[in-house]
Length: 78
Image 1 (cartoon, rainbow, N blue to C red):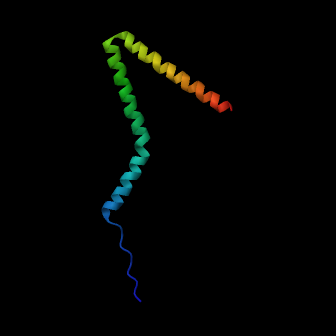
Image 2: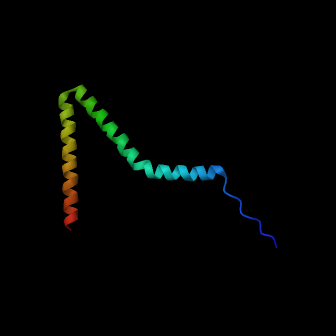
Image 3: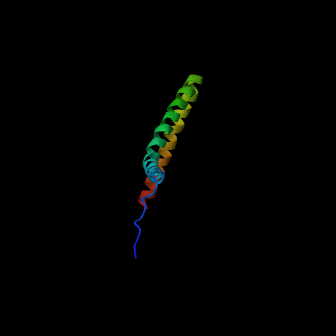
């Protein structure tokens, strides 16, 4: 009995697997980068519209960060 050797997978399947691996690794850093750009552009637009809107946006960001850290610290205690 003669056993035929296995064929290698097609080239496009290997490219698909590599592409998926690269995107899986780079998704969160790219999301953080684009999110940061959106936040900076939003802050610039808010400050350009009226300085009070910019300060309100900064105050909201600081309050959200403080709330997040307080919640995380309370969860770590228990």
